[in-house]
Amino acid sequence: MATPLTASKLVQILRAEGLTVHEVRNWRTHNRNSKGAWGPLNGVMIHHTVTSGTDASVDICYDGYSGLPGPLCHGVIDKKGHVHLVGNGRANHAGLGDGDVLRAVVNETQLPSDNEADTDGNRHFYGFECINLGDGKDPWPEAQKEAIEKVSAAICRAHGWSERSVIGHKEWQPGKIDPRGFTMDSMRTRIANRLKGKPPTTPPKPSYVPFPGSAFFHVGQKSAVITAMGRRLVAEGCGRYESGPGPAWTEADRKSYAAWQQKQGYKGKDADGIPGKKTWDALKVPR
Image 1 (cartoon, helix red, strand yellow):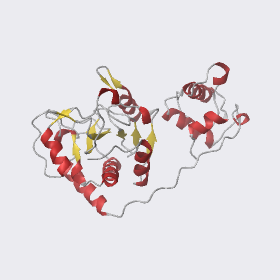
Image 2 (image 1 turned 30 degrees about the horizontal axis):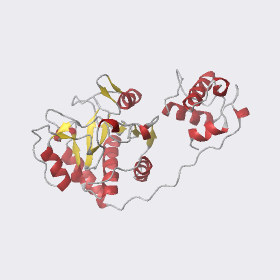
Image 3 (image 1 turned 45 degrees about the vertical axis):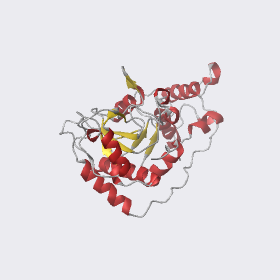
Image 4 (image 1 turned 60 degrees about the horizontal axis):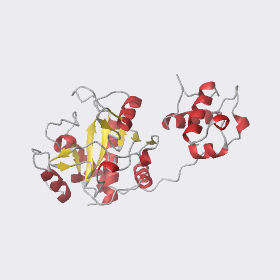
């Protein structure tokens, strides 16, 4: 049993494991804690999305859908092996599962067959959705499988768990088949081997672009800073681009930044789409 990791700690350990981590919108406070307990934590559960495309899959996992509100997991692992964090706290991913399986996870013993649905899994498991159609034909790129391995190992290492604390949805809830396309035994072997290695060092704190001044943002300006800004706006759900973003300052950049200003609580002329220092610092544009 373990106390849930804080949002900051989760980001830290995933990046220390060598993963590319994207923080999606307001994921740090996005949860279903009002609907039930969150913790103690006992393991990590792996799923497949039955969707294609990173942006659409991440949006579904963040927002949920009619009858099942988001977040639908804590992170989405895309085909490139990037991790998109969409929730922090209780999430609608595990549902009811077999209490005997939970006891085996807690004790880190051989998993029994899942033949009951009598225990709340959303309380006890971190959940990661992996983008895959789940039809047995959609490939699992090595980068994606390696990311599953790294995510699982990072969380297990943080809590002092072994690879036996990582299970698939199909091992928890009767009738589920995910993840389909590799065996959980093979994944647990990978995780065990990673846990035997030297723990990763904590990466340096990220460096952000200092505010270049409002006059920097004008028609005709081209800079990698503008591209980086646009990518952060998209990650925050404020992108208003039909294509891009790119290095040239455009009306789409202005509209996107205005959406970010509005998200920060600014209105009217204070949300004109021209960056100011406070909103720029809050956006955290990476160098």
